[in-house]
Length: 435
Image (tube, rainbow, N blue to C red; front, side):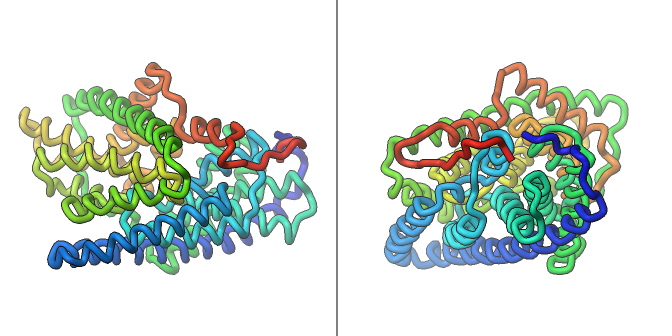
């Protein structure tokens, strides 16, 4: 990759970052709204089928139709399949080339169709990729420098995360830690201006309430900090297990003809929607149920196992959708299970939300291996910056466990698979220098 700290007009770059944040923010806000509506309609559809079981028959027809539509769209634009984050990282590390408008269109169409069936996928990965595509389109229009175009792609990715989660700080750090994996003043300027602008756009449409509004959490004191050891350890194991599951199910789906892969994922969603509707979608409701301790211990364990497996079957199919939110949901359930066990040993139940947020940060850090982004994202999504010490401790401990188990960061592993030539999915790779 070229030196991103090469001399550049920073005020002008910042202005272009604002423009990128505005454009990418609008794209992501629209996508976020549509996906949200689709997820709500899927819950109503499954509820209606529980009341009138005969409706399952026409629903099977919809599953077949939707499965082939998603497969067709992904075949037309393979770079729009899966998360979207590996594709963005690959632009800089592997020279991947993305056609921005086709990717955005397929993301919108296929993501909308998938959302109507409640697949366990999130909006954040697609939002980051569409944001990056927005940055590339701005670069094509307003920049002649290849290096600056690359920076605007990064700024768009930061804007995508900021608009998806109302998390501008996380968007900035994500640009540095995960996309470029190095500090750069140019990346910081474009990431900050784009993320803050996109966050403003998001707040105008969705309000200023944090994505996950947690109850007021009491401070950990004294002996309570000892619980961070099992929290970090178990979160690290769960994050590692998620990575193994996602990759193994992706390998399993390779044995199935591409046109049938989304169909299988949608078919699996049917019994989940009928019998365990709370596990549908990204999992924001599971986080809420976990932190408010509205689940019996046995129910939380069942949700944890099924949500993890359902996420793997949904993502492995190649259907467009992210894994940030499902990973956070699995982490929240993990924290709730550990919290309820701690309560049985004499700890006050008021501390369960603490267990939930710490396990969320730990699970995400163990899977993605971007600890700063994980810590800040949890803090911003919950609207609390006052509990950084236990959250950070859990994330670092979980990362330590994941490293010692030699778990490859999930997006690096997915990118490596994507970059290898496949007979069925040809990913265009530039032969020139990386952007």
